[in-house]
Length: 64
Image 1 (cartoon, rainbow, N blue to C red):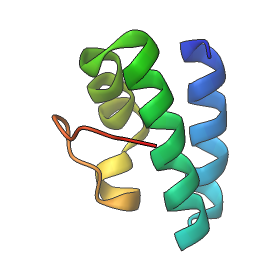
Image 2: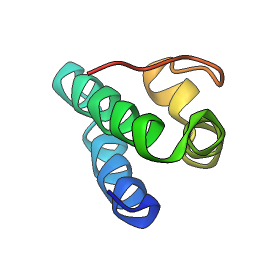
Image 3: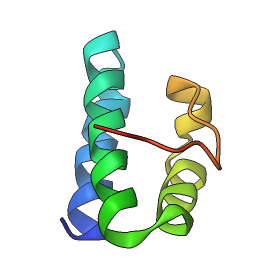
């Protein structure tokens, strides 16, 4: 998955904001972590405000 596609998907999940979207966002971040590393995950968390939206903190390791 490209980082642009991940960003696009995460933006949709943030807008919808339900528990299901939190789980889906978790899966997207796990894929990003696997393909692009922790730095890319942390950058997306900060850019998209995922800490406020879902409680995801930079440095968190995501697994599918």
